[in-house]
Length: 214
Ligand code: G3P
Image: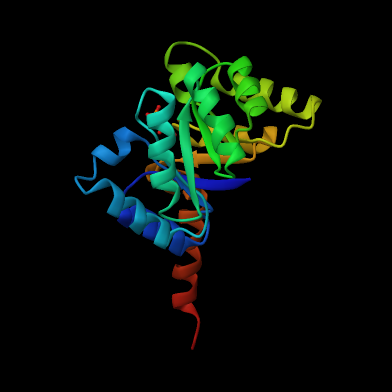
């Protein structure tokens, strides 16, 4: 499973890339707004650090303006993937960008029918938001399982990005189900690594090492 960082923070992205486990980055307007930096230079800097896809979301509401934004963002780097919301206008945008060989990540997916339509329109990625579904007492990971099943049924190549990941169990379940990618906030990365028995074991080894004649 590929790991993407769900952030627009340069320091977090640099650290994740240094750890050697980050395959891409996803951003959204809310994450960008936290950084207090010019949008286009920020995206350019992110693409210069990350050795993989960087999702950048269009914010216009109509087809023509979304295409204009997408073309501008796609010029920044060949790694830019255009994030498009799932709706009627969005489907048209996905189809057009697919014809132009510009990759798309369909965002705000909350049902498997939305995922299937996005894939049929030519989306490179779909992003089911599992945490937000759990927030309203739904089954976010159940949705991921459904999309995996449907894409398998028809050998659909669109990749599934598990998004709105809130805790390590979302991550582990994504891997068990065979999701292509999990996009995780930086805070979740360290939680994935931590284990009290590792810390206790390390402490004991170092204590015993002190007794060894060197
Ligand atoms: O990748 C989508 C993600 O940023 C949404 O996460 O935590 O705002 O639901 P959250």
